[in-house]
Image 1 (cartoon, helix red, strand yellow):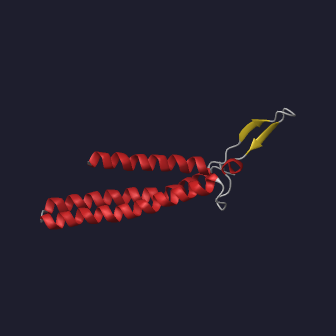
Image 2 (cartoon, rainbow, N blue to C red; image 1 turned 45 degrees about the vertical axis):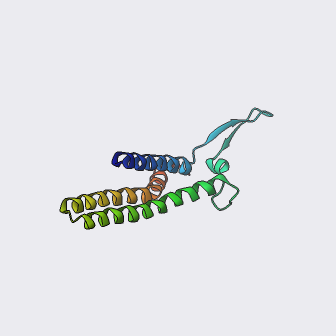
Length: 131
């Protein structure tokens, strides 16, 4: 059970990082114009659209990322509370230590999930990738 939870959390963090990098990267895409054989450069903003318009994919990707961030906080609070309640009810000091260790790991994962888009955006701006 514990390994499944870790695997799910790691996969969420990895997919979240992958989506954030793809969204924030403003790399150029080369397309060939059939009429004049000119090469046109399309930005990722042209492909994903703006995050203000609900008809654009960027809006829904941003909304999904926000949902994942806040679901991670809710999961942190809920699962950590359950672990501490179980440890207190069982009157076992080892269970309480184990619950606090698990809660601290979950907190670190939650902080990573929450600040990963901000960190990726900062790094991409630093190296001028998304300009």
